[in-house]
Length: 295
Image 1 (tube, rainbow, N blue to C red):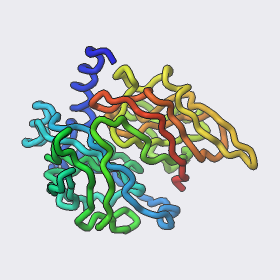
Image 2: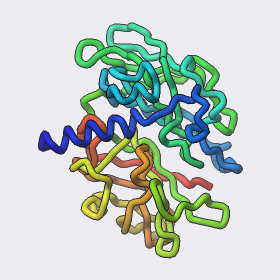
Image 3: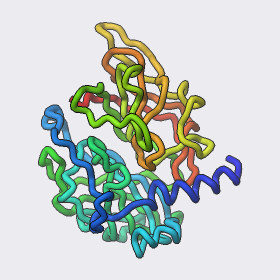
């Protein structure tokens, strides 16, 4: 990757994806999670678990982040992705414990649902603090040590997961499909806007282990469409399709919507390697994940 592109992305994306965060303890109304009125019934019967923990940044939050959180500059950033939406008022920094390679245990200084805080997005938590250093003593696992609840009242306390290393690229953590109906909180334009309602038959929402952009540091666009493949189930047949457009962009989170013109039941999404990068500039490996229904 060219140095100029890497530097541009690192400076903008570090602040955008990990730095433009206001911790939940703040009273800024814009920082409050947007909780949907309904909880998908299907979630009550699914196994609730911690899906990924990603060592996104090591001592790399910029000085500008000080205006958002006084101790943020120079700290680590670690996004966690959960299978279920979280109950925001149960989230506290003290819910988490990070263990490093040599066995040192670190308490978490800050935890937030931002920037993925829109309705039906509340499954990603960003941890801010000090969790060891790459290469000498990187974080290796995260454990839930407090009462952290999903919106279906599952308690994640006691769950743990291995940390994806700093040098690894981002992977798909979760994917779900849905259609637009009269109750959907549809955003026609602006940052994070949805797929065009008239053209879109189905939406596949992909949730990455951390925030991503295109390999050149820009938002995902037409150049990347052919590198995303969705398997649709239509009766007894399967159909391989590609999105005609990306949505939920330019809002600095780890959710990317794939807009489909075809009908069917999406069951799998695949992404070719070296198509997206994380805030550090690391490219993704070839990644795939099963798609579940939101409803």
